[in-house]
Image (cartoon, rainbow, N blue to C red; front, side, top):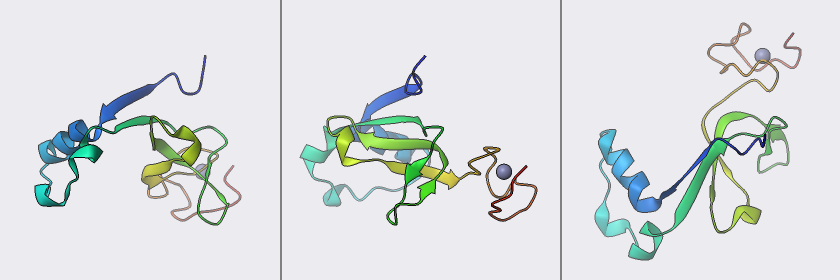
Length: 102
Ligand SMILES: [Zn+2]
């Protein structure tokens, strides 16, 4: 079983539609039509986490990357979570990031 088994690939157009379904207003003038055809893959964050801009490991429930260019890296989406217990920091017993999660 691959850690990447649970994934979905959507075009940017479909993601725009999802955002609009959620109530967001998209400025259509700001969108390049070539971008709308780009496919993005949403998947679970690896157990080992992903690097942030400072090369620190961070953890999120999901990540997204351009399907054609996975080597270019990913963008974590949603709230960060604890790398040990996988709770969001708001759900975390300590309430704040704590290095000594049991
Ligand atoms: Zn924790």
